[in-house]
Structures are given as C-alpha cells and as structure tokens.
Image 1 (cartoon, each protein chain N blue to C red):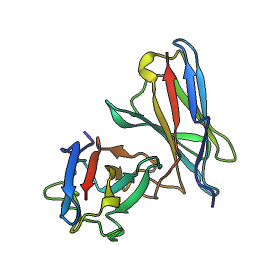
Image 2 (image 1 turned 120 degrees about the vertical axis):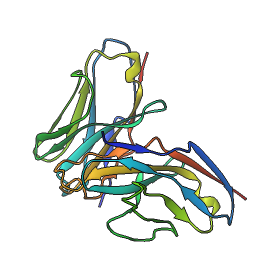
Image 3 (image 1 turned 30 degrees about the vertical axis):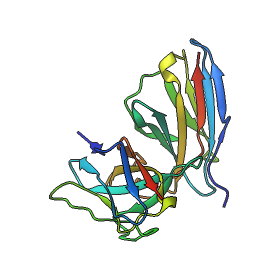
Amino acid sequence: KAGVTQTPRYLIKTRGQQVTLSCSPISGHRSVSWYQQTPGQGLQFLFEYFSETQRNKGNFPGRFSGRQFSNSRSEMNVSTLELGDSALYLCASSQRTSTDTQYFGPGTRLTVL
Amino acid sequence: AQRVTQPEKLLSVFKGAPVELKCNYSYSGSPELFWYVQYSRQRLQLLLRHISRESIKGFTADLNKGETSFHLKKPFAQEEDSAMYYCALSGIYNQGGKLIFGQGTELSVKP
C-alpha cells in the first residue's frame, strides 16, 4: 500500500496570510490526525478526523482548522499566520481507533516570514 | 493531566553497549504506550507498542504501571540505532486518534 502523502512538502508564507495543507491517508484508513512539530514544543496534537467528523481537538487557537472529505483525505487550514506557526506539520492515518497504529506522512515544512 | 516525559534530550553510547531510553507518563485511566522512531531524513514510524509485547530490532519496553514508566531497552546498541526516539501515549478507551508525545531523546551510537 502507498504510504501517507502530504502536499506541499515546503511552504513559505508571510504573516497574516493563510495556508492550506493536504493529507492523503493510506487506503482504507478512516482516521486522520494532524500534529505540529517544533524544536521548542515538540510534537503537539492539533486535531483528528474520522468519517468526516472532528473527533478530537488539541489546544490550539481557532485559526487552526481542518476538514475531512468522503474519501478520507484531509486538509488543515491556518489563517492569519504568525511567525510562531513556523513548524513541520505532520499528518498521520490509522484504521479506526486510538490504539490502532498511526502511520505518519513526511510532513509539510511551513515557514512564516 | 496527560503528560509524557523523556528526561534525556541526548543519549550517547558506544556500539555494543546497553541502551535505556527513559519514559515516564501521567495519565488518569488505562494508557496505551508507544515508542516511535525517526531515522535521519525518514518519517516518524512506530517502533513498538506495549500491548503487542513484541521485540523490534532488538528493542523491548515494559509498561510499569506502579512507576508509570515505559522505558525502552536494548542490550547491545548498533550504529544504525542512531535516531530520535519518541515515547507516546494514547487512551485505550478513547475513540479518537490522539497521541501525546514526549519531547524525544536523540540516541547517538558511536563506533
């Protein structure tokens, strides 16, 4: 099976702009989770979608949002970008539950100038 | 509060030496514990999970509920073990796919 794919791999934006990141899960996986990885804060959970519904949400401001489509592909959006949003954004997919193995994508490196 | 603590940012050992990467957790419930590994220029991947009780690449980890620990061990380190290791926690009865990660430990195995 093809692994989790994320597009684009790199993004450079300026403060105040918005950005949309995309994630295609492994075929048959219905759960998609998003994480932010920074040197200071490490890996932090953003949110998780299952069957087009947000099932879990981390402690991030409302500028961070996401959605999932009927084919399980997911997008996350960050509006009004801030310098502190510069990070590696990882997407992970799993079959169904929290105890199923999560498979990670390569990440999207977002730089905010 | 749910938390995973990896006290060592960097662990450096010589090839053939034993390795122990520490992980302590705080969770009010029944946790599922994982170790994820990220080799240089590769994506994050699952190394092992406590519920499967497997030994992967010579690594083992035992869940100690009394000490709330899930330390990762290997009796003889190899150079190819050099990587970032993350301990992670999920709730068994959570429906959602939410992992709480520790800050990670960089393992460096010297020849």
